[in-house]
Length: 234
Image (cartoon, rainbow, N blue to C red; front, side, top):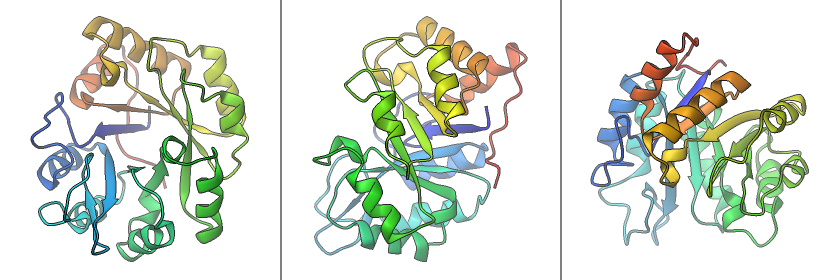
């Protein structure tokens, strides 16, 4: 696996008090992991990193996280778009921060009226922005994701249990998509089920994993003698 994303900057399990913070992001990046973060904008037009909305960007300015990301040019950032209505401003911000080449945007389908329309809009606004389409067991089919040509990445999610097959992964990769899976513990799976799924994903050639436990994943991968690189090829 070439992409390991620390979910909200967590490296050894969920830590609600510090996740998405510059402190957590700094630690994850220093360990060689990529990151998954949530981005929003306050009423004054300032971007901030937080899963939940805040009244102000004070205390969580996105600039702090982008500065850390620039310092690790080999790391990837999955940016969860939590709000719509300022797509052009978001792209301008990421471009000005010098991180657009390291990032991809995802989860627009969860908040848009029609799947794929935000990805199409973003692609028109900026031809180089990388985008992901969701595939899940919540009505987000492989067919629907592949019908979004601007999305070169698949965000593969299993909300209600293991449903993805090796054939599904093969189909997505044969379509030229980079496949990043959501680790089962993010939806409440226990250690055994999570470890078994990690082994499946690695054996099937999934390109990346988003997890609260990137450090543990690296240990599992080593025991399975699977080569794992925590940096992202250009």
